[in-house]
Length: 568
Image 1 (cartoon, rainbow, N blue to C red):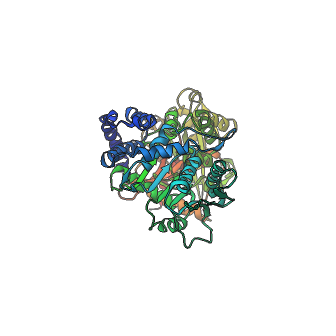
Image 2 (cartoon, one colour; image 1 turned 60 degrees about the vertical axis):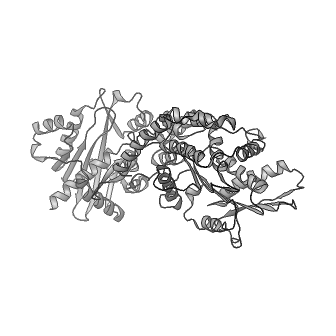
């Protein structure tokens, strides 16, 4: 995502908030149908910071659709009554559930708009985090199709895996067994529900991507569960292309994000974003997307509440707190899972991933600087902080014999800034294990950094010391005072300066020519780094978020920049 596009989203956020504030919601008399629809719409309009841009745009679009088509109360209430009389699996067994305000909005958007005897909305994207009650929501749509949908209804539940496809179908089957316990009207087995009503032929079936019986389909409703995990859309398009003869077909994708940005669902979600932003019009599509806004802090409870519309209903804030703490504690893969499943963001949606934490760990070697007995010529770079960030110092040792490079990075953090830090527990553990050096005070003690570099100079011949001139004046003055002035070289933190070392590092890493010291903070930093690009397609690593540090990555690339410059 470019900065220009982010600016567009920021501008649109302000604009849609103002537009919704000007809507006379009372005039729509939504409470005459169901008070919960109005409650939800007012909540989004009155509290813009508690709801993401696309959620706001969906509500605004709803009012435009009401203006255009009216709202069919009969069809809406018919579905509401069905849902609230079905029995779904719960903690205490089968039980009924009342619709939440957000659910009433979703179903009113699906079933409320008609042109004559044809329903306007035929495609649905519900993009929600885990623990939203996706399965019950989608199962109810399947039950509705078999009971009240098109003549000779064919409802298919499908997913990328057989187990996932069966989850939704098993709930549909359970609903019918409760509705018709003796099987007089509906025959339900493991993979199919068949209507026995002579005046209402219909069936529901569970399908997977490896199913062999895909010919001759005439789908009326297709429910696709966890589509974000699907590597291709063959089954999806096979089913949807069979709907041509249907009067009121319905395709529902209900999914949570994944890390697979090269999969078809990612593009579909992006298309829904463009739809809501008004880049194109398609009244047949209803999209309800829950994700953070561009500037939201992923570690903030306000963000978690914004992302999850059922916070306090189907999921607790304590659950999010525990999962966040675990993600911070357990490394990049755990954080990736938190972002995709609970923040509902594609892990690489904004920028292209670079060196994974997994690859970083493969490059790690248990090498200390003391193990290099020769007086090698080296490059050094440092990246400084004040209080809330690492300071990092990297030594790059180039072995001219086998053309390999070893990057050794040490990390520093002020001990006084640990208490209350978002990563406090993780940093304390690293410090106890000797991976993170704590300095005295609330801010980093630059004398410790200088002393460390002086120690390196006693063991190696330092050719150049690279640094970001921002906040570096004190350290550079101290290094100059001890004879390092000729070695100091500022490196502007521009895209252009990082493109060549990024490309070289990536290429050599994959060739096995790079090793790094076995400090878990290195893997942590690489796992947090994604590539950002300028208009000229120059690139440099950027943080996934403010609390996800990449300082070691930056200093490694700065030393490589120095080597590349020296070879010219």
